[in-house]
Structure formats: C-alpha cells, structure tokens
Image 1 (cartoon, rainbow, N blue to C red):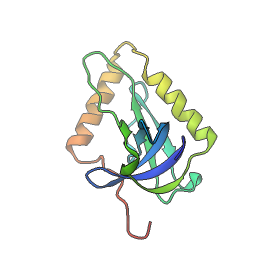
Image 2 (spheres, rainbow, N blue to C red):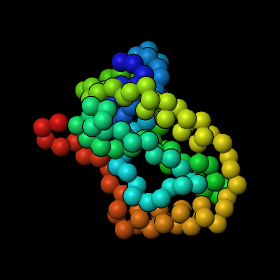
Image 3 (tube, rainbow, N blue to C red):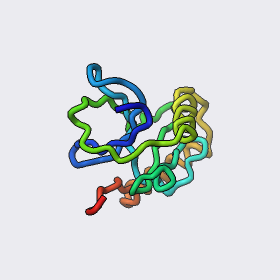
Image 4 (tube, helix red, strand yellow):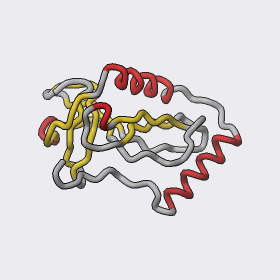
Length: 142
C-alpha cells in the first residue's frame, strides 16, 4: 500500500479512495473519489479527474474546496486503518498526483469571498437539494 494507489474502502458501502500518505501502523491519509459536481467550481474549489486514463474501471474526481469566510466545507480527506482497505483498484500517474498535491496546497489558502464565489456556492447548494450530486457506486463486474 503506497501513495497514489486507489483502493476500495468499506465505509457505509464500498467507496474508492486515493492513498496520499501513511503506513499500516499509523493509518493512511486518503481522499475519497466522488462523482464530478457538474457545477463550475472556479473560485471556490478544484476537481482533479481520475478514471480510465489512470487504468481505473470508473470515472470520478478528487474534490477540494477553497476556504471561504462564513462557509464550512465538507471534506473527503480522512485517515483509514489498513483493515478498511478492501481491494486495490489501480494507481494514479505521477502527473495526476502532482495535480492533487497542487489542489491540496491551493485549498489550504484562505481567500477573500467574492460575489461570484458566493453565487457559485448557491448553485452548488441548489444542485445538492435537487439531488444532482451522486456518489460513485461500485457496479457489478468491477
């Protein structure tokens, strides 16, 4: 188990994650791979695409939000115990890992809130209410 590997993890149901660091003794820092938002995140977050080009049997994104005053963002970053890892799904390229590292770096910076960012946050909230954000589901045969 090493940085850049994608694994299926048993949360409430099997979900894909990319390992970012760690070891079996202390746990693994990982980011959940989720479905693309379908909303323009410019100014409020970043999505790094992963999928078939990486040799995976599914398409998804690693999503990170930029800090905004007055908003608390859900995060898909967590620490996992080795026994939660079910099955290895693939390995990300060094280029994709570089994109994730840059997104992590950018997401740690606090920026000023702008009307455009506030508007996009409203769009995302509305999309969530309409049920347009869906988790990746492991399909039969994968």
